[in-house]
Image 1 (cartoon, rainbow, N blue to C red):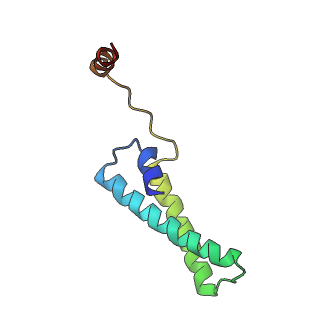
Image 2 (cartoon, rainbow, N blue to C red):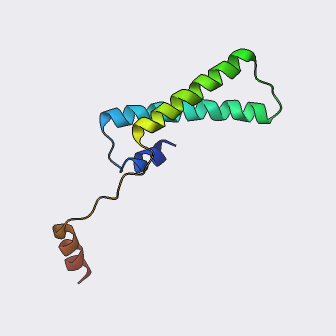
Length: 89
């Protein structure tokens, strides 16, 4: 999840984006663990259900802060294109 989100923001996250990515990864991990428990037939306790909803809401807000659309690919400059062409020649 972490590497996918780093890629989502363009590959070079700022320190604040990295903090949000770490938080989103942690929330996703714990929600996935709860999902697995419930899929295995374990009914969630009332406290667990409230915790799950709180995490889901927090994850939604965190993802919204990171941006719902993938960052545009960074265009290579003319210098990089010429260097690549010289390398191929």
